[in-house]
Length: 560
Image (cartoon, rainbow, N blue to C red; front, top):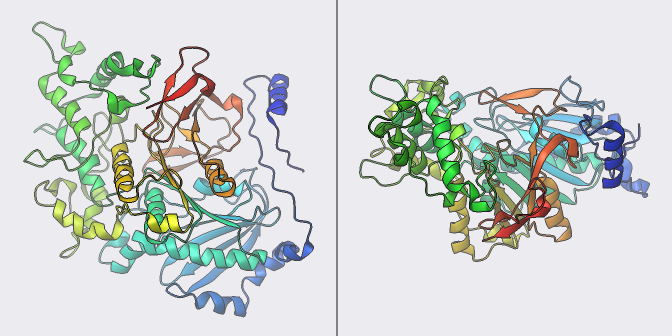
């Protein structure tokens, strides 16, 4: 079947014919095949090209890669329609290659057997990794990219891989990402008989950390990087942010001080005070950092119905959620979560009941397995409740030098001609948005104006990596392509709020216990979303003009 990319007029006609609520996912048409048959040698017989990767000569080439000798374990053709045994009917036929980089780094490379767009993209992983998160990079594969992902040097969920495993920690920190890029490019070149014209990276959360590490430490690996919600403090984020909020909301008897029934009360008060700051009352704060809400205003007065107010202790908890972790001297150790994201307080970390606190104990003890940097790792015996906010920050800092992408100096990346898009949702309840803002400001101080190669976007209402009450989905790939390949810097990103349930999702995957739907395909079909708004490079925010449909990005303007 021939794939056709519909233009705007054709899409509108299709909508009219099928009805506004028609469930339709547009396919991305592959680029036209080159006319010179010589450069198509690697694709003339896909099965033979895949098999050719097993030759002794090529195997010796991979085994001789400096610092990362590699081998291919399997290479096979997968018909169009999916790599997972499920009906992902928009995926092209591929040569699927699984391999190993010494000693334990696994990688999965998928290469379209026809219509390759001459580009390569690496996808990041999430949490502790340990598997190939194919879904997160499928959006590039349907555009006929060659795509790769890595397990970061270990198999299986959780952090046990790092226990008494110094090499595994190095792989997870940076080695697996860099060497997977190096090895995958060699295989891509062998399969297509030519190198990719552009090399890109896309990742969020741990994947965002991988992208920032690449920009800082291996600036020549990629022409462009999309890094979302990076983990800037691999060991510290758990005690400083995730467990801090659980700890400050736990009474002596183990119950929650601030309970779920009070969240709507607080959220409504926040909106009353700050919702109109962007020119529109719509239940969404475009810039929550400018909201000066004080939860003490909700403390019960004498004779007031307690269902409509807070106790002093509950107001204190809400303020601590917002302010972030402190030591006993009141010194700030980390950032909190902005006002407007109160719905995110009820989560799988158990900040507010009735959710199960599944991340207490050993399952939540990232620091216990990754190690503090001095002495033996604590391992399964460590409890996050053992963390001391006065004693342990300096211990975390030693190991953090390995994992954390905290270097603001991007001069090497700039010199290599790279472009970096950093995004972070305002309502993120895994990693605070102010961590990315802090990095951006430090980078400005270190490098001067970075707008020609590094821009930060903070979509309002976006949760961790995507989704949320605001615009949780955006076409980051096209924005990066336009910047790298056409010199058009992203002056705005259009963020879409998808209707629920998203009609094209054939499956979901589990990540930290929460369902992540199949990543949106672009160009997105209008029937799939109910709101689209511009997001400008930080610190510029969008403001409603006061005229026209607020669901249309045309009716918003930038405001400093």
